[in-house]
Length: 105
Image (cartoon, rainbow, N blue to C red; front, side, top):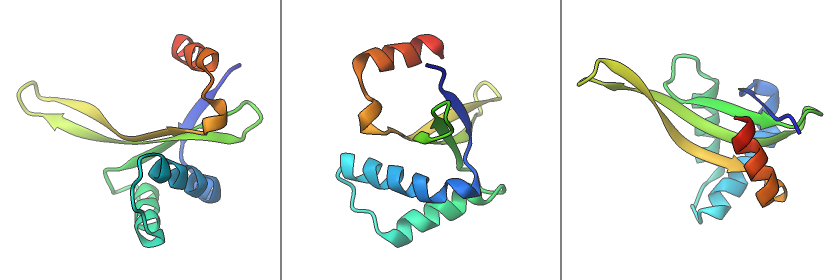
């Protein structure tokens, strides 16, 4: 199966919110609606350092999220990427599917 990753878009809000709530529950994080909406606002602000990505099924259904941000490495004068959050719909976490996703990456 060919999975696709793309930048988070405004129309992803409701599905993103479902997945982000699942992320918080999985890690037993107390997360208010206000906190989640603040995160969404950051993700939608092109001037903010936090960026959102979504994985979607070939049908277009969003099945996972990632929140990432760049950081500087002064010692090497380079940029790195930091993965803050990663979550995939639990129904898609079969071992064979994970191996395929890793192999196809």
